[in-house]
Image 1 (cartoon, rainbow, N blue to C red):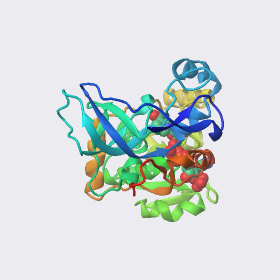
Image 2 (cartoon, rainbow, N blue to C red):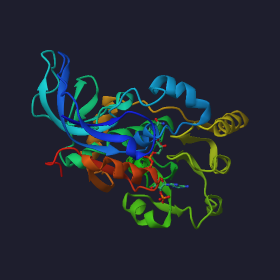
Image 3 (cartoon, rainbow, N blue to C red):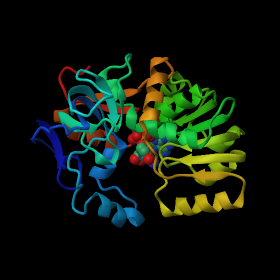
Length: 328
Ligand SMILES: NC(=O)c1ccc[n+]([C@@H]2O[C@H](COP(=O)([O-])OP(=O)(O)OC[C@H]3O[C@@H](n4cnc5c(N)ncnc54)[C@H](OP(=O)(O)O)[C@@H]3O)[C@@H](O)[C@H]2O)c1
């Protein structure tokens, strides 16, 4: 089968399309024919070894020193169950599924074996394979943080980085939870963020966050670039600042200091992904409360171009990788 291999860390040119053995499912596994995957910030970060200096050694200890130990990257996918192991009960041949592979990676390939307990669910019926592939990684992360923030009806929630992979879902999930949502993005993305349901939009290239005279119950920094002290000052008493990217020591120390000094909480950490949450997202999608914002689609053969685009840090929503020609 075709797969994209990453033998060493570096620019998108380290990604090589090659032939590898097709996997065979074990008794508790399903073999999924992958229809689509994505190029996202997580793959680009691992490929480029973009780790903050304090985490460089532990992350490379876990991931590999010269290149990723998991040579086939790709953290999410959609596809069709082609065969099942003899102990599998939840899936049948022909089921259309979507899944997060997380730290196991492996989605930059034509086939993957996943246990039936993997973070996988039946594909939303109203999504194409391309759209469904773009859901698990970022939407599960968005849901994780908004759950941590106990986002609820009537709360005022700011999503910083509202036009990115996580942000586009965070806006929609916070709206589905009944919050009043303010999205922060640049001029080019204002209409997109409004169309996703944001009640207010702040253009960070023209406006200062603190000029608005507004306050928030929850501020979710989906890209780790919001000014943390200013944001915490905008929180109501007992409010929460959530950060999907909480990797730099000065920000971590600032977060601890701000949490200790006041009733406000700064929360980071790695998102937890579950099948239960993936099924919840599937229901949001099928009820018409969430959709995927697709920036562009590349064939697997153009994975380098797709990664180069993600590396700009300015994609709008998601970059889909079409693995199988039948994918729409
Ligand atoms: N903690 C976890 O478990 C977890 C899970 C998943 C992902 N992540 C991390 O979360 C981060 C975000 O992922 P993502 O997929 O959402 O990223 P992304 O899609 O690559 O983010 C791109 C978006 O960020 C916006 N942006 C760039 N600079 C900005 C700024 N200064 N202010 C406001 N918006 C800005 C861009 O809009 P403009 O072009 O308008 O600037 C663009 O739409 C990544 O670092 C990823 O590794 C963490």
